[in-house]
Length: 326
Image 1 (cartoon, one colour):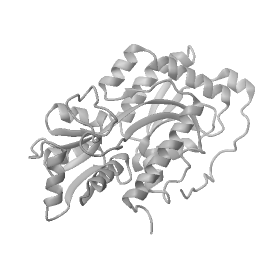
Image 2 (cartoon, helix red, strand yellow; image 1 turned 90 degrees about the horizontal axis):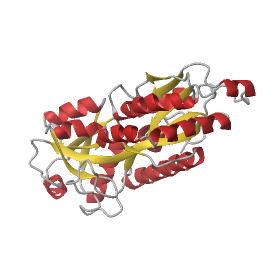
Image 3 (cartoon, rainbow, N blue to C red; image 1 turned 180 degrees about the horizontal axis):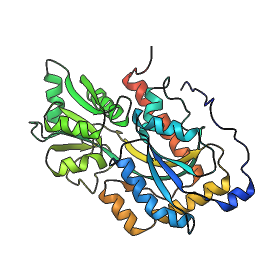
Image 4 (cartoon, rainbow, N blue to C red; image 1 turned 90 degrees about the vertical axis):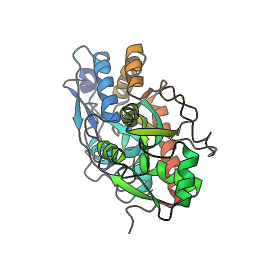
């Protein structure tokens, strides 16, 4: 990936020991690169409520939404802040894997090197959905119709280069049909398009899809995880539908600017792990469509982000996507 250096990043000096001991000395901000109400925002708010008291008796976490560019605007903002632990990003597969993979000339940060990696929050599969009024009841019928259509089938997701875009592109590529991608500004716009049957299918984050699957405005035909999901036990995986090895999950991680002192990283990681061990928090995340992550460390979180970035770079090469290039 062609990387642009963060020329405006603060001087990364060793943080004074006294400041580390007094951490936090003001509210901690969770920066979310999406609008309120989406899956990333929901996960951030649920975690903040249970994580704050575990950082310190007077610790507070506030949410700041900086939406745009599939989460990349918020991530770039976080990367430019002082690495004192008071500004953290709740980042996603879109901001730290699919956007950098599909839009390497426009993402102005390195998703691995420009961040301190704290912990993995959770994730879940994508869902291939059709409108509730669609005649296609399963993947086989959808694919057969796409191959027989005189014009490319219309499909959509939230934003070019996001995880929905790459998931849908790989789905069409591996099944061997042409589709025309329609980008939308957000999940609510995709939902409205599905209600009106303006598109034939979509690849959506499970947490965002569940409300309109429950009200019948959309219908699931497959999930992209390695196994069926407890929230949708009757819905097959794409592996079951004839695509061996097709496994894509979306995820959220907690990160701060690079060069954060190790003591603060470890303190934040410990607070995250203690919060995620609470049965009530895990229950609420699961109901929201977010599978709580297994225990992680700063090192394992870094390795996870690097591996996911490499996976989506391979998907871009396989599908031949060309975005943001001259």
